[in-house]
Image 1 (tube, helix red, strand yellow):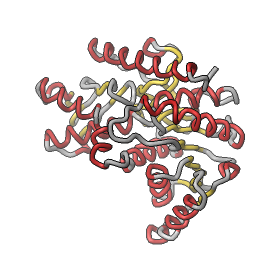
Image 2 (cartoon, one colour):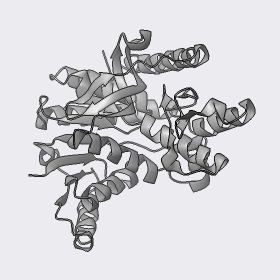
Image 3 (cartoon, rainbow, N blue to C red):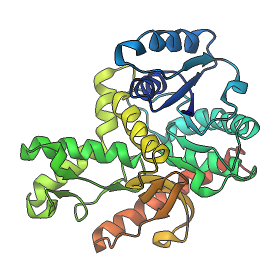
Image 4 (tube, rainbow, N blue to C red):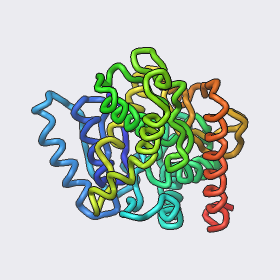
Length: 318
């Protein structure tokens, strides 16, 4: 029996993710959105395509949260996307109310012992923190609630490295930790090309240029698209996480996770390397970061903490 993945928000990211899951027959898919008829139309369109790919996945669209009942995984993509010149922080007050409502409905219809929740909505770290805090009141443990950021940021880092060195992306293994924003930490030490550390392949100026472009990777796409934000790569990154969970692959991936002492941090959600399997975040891996990388991660953690505290100031959390 196929797993059930429900996607809250059937916009560009949600619909693209649903399409990937259905094409590769990873799961059955529920697309939920508040816009009447839109998720039903997208679900029908995807369904009519699947015979071409020999897929028997079932895809439905709905405006009723009840249809997410029994989900193995719920992905939250709901909320406003960034517009040109808008920071992730500016999204906070608008999206927080939406994410809180979504979280309460997940708790209402999904089993805390079975369901795993992946947050994609921005600002990612704060929205994942909010989702966990709401769902923890209903029995969801921290391994069951996570954010998708590091896989996306690492994929962007891989792309830029591949372009610079003119080598296959398949030879590159990258880790980007910390926040999903300007203070993210692309780890030079733990990013390798055919097993060779990146710091041995590029000079400091080229490394810094790659790091800065990775940090601004999302904003660069927003500025080019004008009225939209990235969706192909975010959807594919979420797809990779879902595969590791459903097939219990236990891949080590950078995932935004609630920490309680790891790396010296408490009561925040931050991107760290984890083992991702059927039980969600099965282990947080503690890298031996360089002194500079740890300092940068501390800066990122402080920024995340400040943003998360705003949720209390806004009275979204009490």
